[in-house]
Image (cartoon, rainbow, N blue to C red; front, side):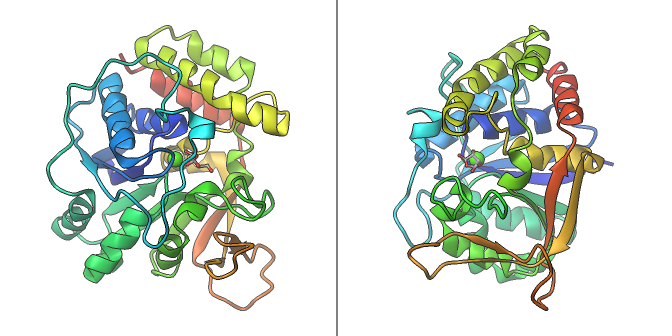
Length: 313
Ligand code: BDR
Ligand code: CA
């Protein structure tokens, strides 16, 4: 039986690849909806990018909902310097024919959790946690109905990519991230510590390029653009595929290693705001709230991605 998921996202090239991976895997994943949030770019653009990605996959049966346009407490910080002005720079995708649903994304999340049996819906978060935080504030009854949150965000050994202490998704909305971390919902966390091990090296990209179909070719064009930033910044021979780790963990958890630990979010300090304070070594006596992924079989990951992209038009 396939697992019901909602993808909460701010596409973003790596978000788009995560969406394609999920939509190419209907035996395992029943995508109830895609909810957009402001993050990499503004909300109207992340919504447009989500619609273009869904059309690229051919899965126009999957609805897209627009969520929150700004973080809970602070103004939006974008990452156009990484993703380009559209957030999805690289391929030349046609303007979307689909439209976003009328219902607000936060209300869709609430309704989906109330109308499905408890503990049967997993939330996959690929951007700032604003929509999930708002849904938990608006409808506290849904919190205990969430099966699991699989989240891309934060870092421990890699520390930060947006400030010296903070990763982008957490830094953009630390209050929402804090609320979600304290919610009691089981969380699987893919931080930079694991996503920085999934690099789009030349060989891996060639594997996808060789598929020669529309979605695979657009993926390579997206990743060609996306990787230039981290190549220059870190001197790596590829860019990290952050958000697809979330979907890959759901499809093949055996590709990843991890441990159960306590993670808290810094919201106070100006210097380290948005830091994921991870008790990786079990120093404090605090209960584990997170399954923290720390290793990945990158070759297996790219084999899975290529196998699934091959199924798309
Ligand atoms: C995260 O930030 C975004 O720019 C990416 O899409 C990913 O979700 C990595 O820090
Ligand atoms: Ca993202």
